[in-house]
Length: 476
Image (cartoon, rainbow, N blue to C red; front, side, top):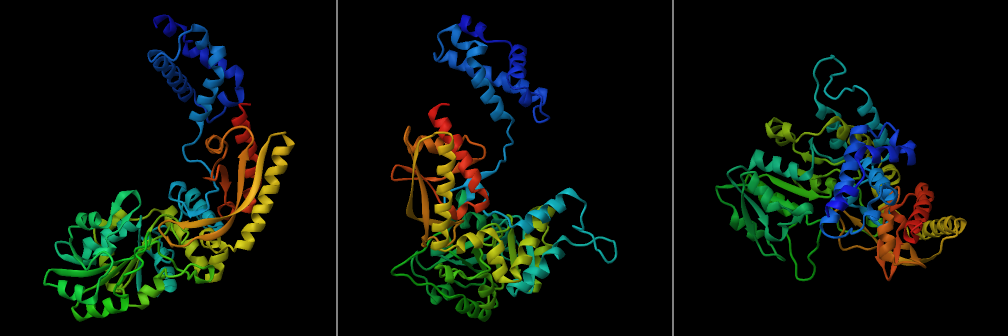
C-alpha cells in the first residue's frame, strides 16, 4: 500500500501537466491558483482512499498519464459555478428542484438594473429623504387584487408566521382538520403555527367540516379563523367544507379576523386551459378574507416571496411587528416582483409574457407542433455526427407543479429518445453531465422530453446537449 501511495504524483507536477493539457482552462480568470491546487489535492486524496479500500493494486494505474483525463474532468467540474442553467424537459412547469418559476424578460431586466446600480429601494424621490421599500409594491398589489393594503416578505411560510405572530400569539386559531397540510421540504402548517406561539384548534374531520364545527370551537381564547387552501392535494368523494363567504359571516358575528393561506396564489383564472377550481387572490378578497397570503414564485410566476394583501389596518400592524424586518425582501426580489406585477395589470398580457402562466396555457396542438420541430432538430444534429438513437413522438401529460392543480393532467406530446447503445437510464445520467444539463423523465424504456417547459429558443441547445449525452454514452 505504501508503494502505491508513493506512486501518486506531486501536486506541482500535476498542476504543470494540467497547464500543458488545458492551458485555456488553467489560465482562465475563473481558475485561481489556490482553487486549482485544492482541486488537485482533493483528486489525489480520493485516489488514496481508493487505494485503502483495494481499488488500485498496480503503480501503473496511478501514473499521471493514466490519471490525467480523470483529473481534468474533476478540475473542470470543480471550476463550474454551483448555480447553473438547466434545461427543463420534465413538463413540470413550477419545478421546485429547478428554482420554481422562470422570470419574465421584463423581470430579468429589472433585476439586472437593481443589481448593477444604486436604486431608489428606500429613497423618497420627491424629498430625497428616507422612503419605504414597500411603497414599490403595495399600490400594484392593491390594484390587481382588490386588497386595501399589501406587504411582502421572503416566502409564504414567513407570511403566515408573521400573521399568526402579530394577531394570534398565546391564543387559539381555528382550522379545519382537513387543511393541516404539509408543504415542500417537510414544512407543516401545525409546526408554523406552533412556532408563532399560537394554539391550534382543529375542527371537523379529515374529509368533512361544517359551519357548526367552527361555531362550537369559538371561545374567549379564539383569536382568528384560518383557512388553508389545500393546493397540493384534493379530497374527493364524501367531502364537505365551509365556503369562504360563510366563514366571513361567522367571523364577523364573533368579531374575529378571517385569514386565508392560499398557497400557490393565482391571479388568473385558468379555466379556459382546463384547470378548474383554483380560487384566485381576487376572489378570496371579494369573499371576505381579511388577509390573504400566497407565494410569489409559483403560479404567479415571479420571484420567491410571501405576499400578503388585505385590510389596511391589519396589514399596517404586520408592518409594525419587529419580526417584519427579519423577514423582509431585498431589492432584487422587489424589482423582479414589481416588473412581474406590472404585466398583470393587463391579465392577457401576463398570460402571454410571464413564462409560468404562458406554459400552463399552451394548447395540445401548439405542443404537438413544438414536439415535431424539436424532434427534427435533434435528428439533424445526431445524424451530422453519425450517432444512433431512435427518436419518436408519443402523447403524454404535463403537470403544473408547485402544489397547484394536483388533480389535473395537461395534454402534451413527448419527444422520446431510445439510444441504440446503452439504456434510457444511462442516457438520463449522461444528460446530467452535459453543458447545460437537461432533465427529462423515463417512460416505457425511453428518455422523454416535454416541449411545454422548453422554450423554442432553446431547441438548438437541446439538440446540442443530446449530441453531448450520446457521446458520453458511447464513451467518446
